[in-house]
Length: 384
Image (cartoon, rainbow, N blue to C red; front, side):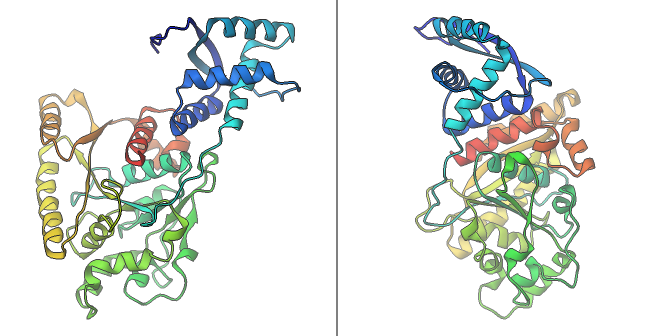
């Protein structure tokens, strides 16, 4: 961290904090729009003004932490800690907890047009649609949003990665709801994704292998426009419970993808960029070929149905600069398109693979890892 350019003299604070507390501070400060140094300053001021004993915080397993606070305040705080016989890192942990308690996650005002709907799509498999949709959904839940992530790929990788089984083939499912063959409320199928930082705000709509039959069922439907609108009709009953609905799309150009794209379209009265499609790609030629086909599908659907689908950007995934010219030139090719913009480059690291192997959400398995931080950055960008 570099010293801030401020008129007020500030000292650099270097200490150790419990990893969970440090992480919570970083996420909360970003969510409520406060600089970390200002949050810590306010916390210290509240700590010095407190007229009651404060509970001790377990600081046994702590990581390095640094920021800047006003010099006079810092000096007085250290003196107070010394007078109370309190370790400095304990006092700072208490101060940060005071600030967090005074700044809870904001109550999210729901848009009149319903939840924001983000499709992660690319007709090429293996580019990271599942990893990106899951990671961003987790980051949004950390920020206080209520999020439903829909495993819309019949292969069900998302469902498995989060540690759950596919719905039984003869049970109720999203597909059965889409084709009018349901036996119960779709909300009964939702599974809460565990994680203290998600606060019961993240839910999964799991996959069922009957998804392989979806295109055939929609193709033979006699209902007008059901081929593109079935997903929206099925999800309508659960929309009132969520701020974001994230769709992990299948790697196809069939009716299922048409439904995901139609669902993510801009609704009447919805601000530009509130909903739309994010396109995970890799820095190689086959991803570019796949995007050309997807682009044609999007343009065709918009033209045929008179709708607008906002392009929210590319995520260049599994980037490994050690592969040399092929990946670096491909990345520059994606950036040169201008629109959609490249909103993130995700390096090829072990965190995601290990999280998948352990069937644990990435932001729980490696909450401080580089990939988790990128997921949070993307979430902050699309939620802005």
